[in-house]
Amino acid sequence: MSRRRASVSAPVRALEDPSLAALVVAAHPLPAVTGGSALLEVDGRLLAIHDDAFRVSWIDRASFAVTPLLLLGDGAALPKPDKPDFESAVRTPDGAVHLLGSGSAAKRCLVARIDPGNAVTLRQRPALYRSIQKALASGERPNIEGAIVVGERLRLFNRAAGHTPNASVDVAIAALHGGAPRVLALQVFDLGTLDGVRLGFTDAALLPDGRSVFLAAAEDAPDAIADGPVSGSAVGLLEPSPSGVRARWTRLLGNDGQPSPYKVEGLAIDRDVRGAFLLTDSDDPRVPAMLLRVELRGFA
Image (cartoon, rainbow, N blue to C red; front, side):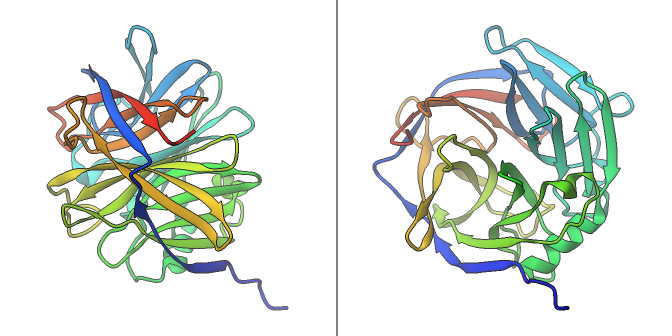
């Protein structure tokens, strides 16, 4: 019996859309948070994910007070070769939060589960990342930076690096728990550029109507591990279309109307889709992450 192959669609070219707008209206420094890489809203609080530590941070939405939760050891920031590189987070229907390593190195194939009572389980899932790497077919390791749950599927967003494209990759939710990590669908994206630098996915959030909001950053780096200068960030929409999916975005602007310099990697969007919190990453452990309050137009 032959195995069913994952469905693969033609590449989608994203377009800058002047009907969309994303404007930073406030910025709150988070002194205890470095390496901001993903953001979730969980029962009225924000959960900030760190890529450089075995630690997450609960953030009070009103006071912005930060309460750390250790995943392993002392939770201190780690040097680049040792960091878990948790770059995406998703909440599953059972209420658990799952953090996923980027997969950009062998040590970064870790999945952490945080149960509602804050019990933490860490598991290596190399088979999941091997399956994604094979589907992307570039010969390079994946760089998973966003995750959403769509029905019974886990949709992972790969950030372009080197010869590996921006892509969404669907697997069964059971892959988080060690289930078969077969890729069910693959969609490649050309997100375009900011100031000549390629945009790459950095996070995503599912909307109630089935559309998705995504973040992308323009970072001039040669591969998935190296850091580079950042030209800015974009906020975009993925939505169904007669041809499969439509992708469009707008550049993130400061409250002065000028391009924002921030590299944004975490997204928690309001239910009315008119505002959001974004989490920044400076790629420097000496510089704290910023929690940005952003006004959205044209996304609702």
